[in-house]
Amino acid sequence: MKFINSRVLAIASLMLFGTLWGCKDEPKKENTPPPEPEVTKAKNVPMFDADSAYNFVARQVSFGPRIPGSAAQKQCAEWMGAKLKQFCDTVYTQNVHVTGGDGKSLPCINLIGVINPKATKRILFLTHWDSRPWADQDTKDKDKPILAADDGGSGVAVLIEVARQAKLNNLPQSIGIDILLEDVEDYGRSEWGEETYCLGTQYWARHPHVPGYKADFGILLDMVGGRGAAFPMEGFSTRFASDIQQKVWKAAGNAGFSSFFPYAAAPDITDDHIAVNKIAGIKTIDIISLTPDPEKPFAAHWHTHADAMDIIDKGTLKAIGQTLLEVIYEQVPASANPV
Image (cartoon, rainbow, N blue to C red; front, side):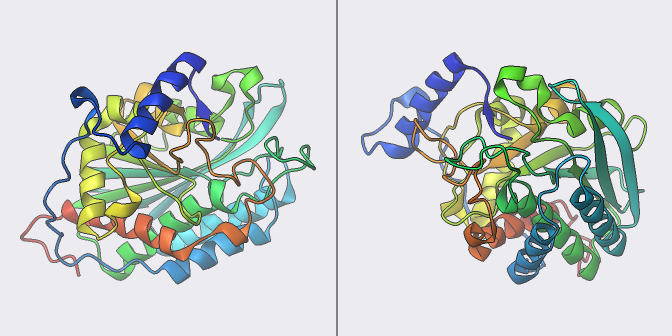
């Protein structure tokens, strides 16, 4: 799901987006993004394995569209749960029903993998794993579900690989990681209202896997595996958690992937981070692929049948995954030995 919050906000934000990213003239002073910080790479950061992440995307796609109530939904949930159990200390499953914008009761499976559950310093990573039931942006077969290799599959793959690297490299006990794989995100429609999106995350935000759950901050991944992707600074993230956004963009530069993370303002996007910020009260940003084209802010494969393995790029997966590992290991105290 990617939904620009409102027509007025979208126009204003997109105008700013195009100014900061696409225009060669010097922007107005008040719209000038902050200077890129000095590179200070964290020590002993594991290397993200893009080949492994790519294979994790392919495995999800092999089940077919993961839409609510399908065999693919159950099969993929079982596979993801097994992977989380392999790399995490504890895994929680929320098997519930949520109500779609069309009034249908939809089976929803949220999975939460916990690393170092006793650590008080915690980072929340989240992404949706379901497929959109309709290819509403395509020119044909609009009523058929999509494979969602990027819009869902890529985020899951990156987070499972991050968990694998944390396990392999003995993440210090002082740092806790929670990986939320949320379901029924992409069932909504604009005519039903913004609240019909992100249903699994809305449920988790009201009923977290641990009562009173809190994290230092959260990072949402959305469409993070496409060829030629770039991740400018999404608008709601800037307002909800600008310090976290700056932290992550700095980590991207430290990891050597600043070209994927332009210091450019982007539109307000209604996404899972809204519920985490507003309902769960956790400062959370959205790393989401956006283009500098005000008329077409989302990638060409968005909500189409082209969202398949052909558009998944290992270089993009690497940029995102290595950045997240940089963020994690920057939190490790200097006295700790993370490897």
